[in-house]
Image (cartoon, rainbow, N blue to C red; front, side, top):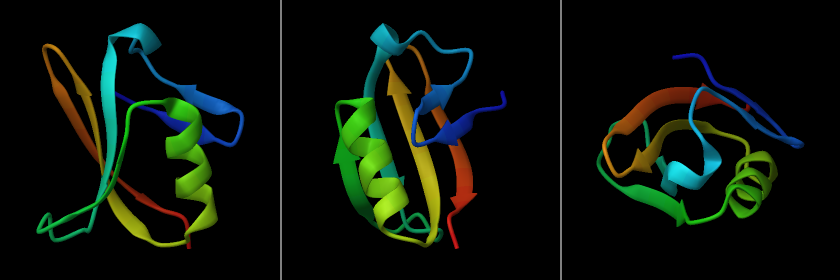
Length: 71
């Protein structure tokens, strides 16, 4: 599934009310850098700290995993 992240929001085929958490992990998957329960805080952090991340979006049924570089 393709997701588009911008400062205005996330465009994805996931209903926002289904999302339980947004997590940023290091690329080695060893530790969680930050975890958020709301989209706005997640995006603010994401665009404030340049880097390469693994992103995990958690719902009741699935954990969506992807990679993103803001460098």
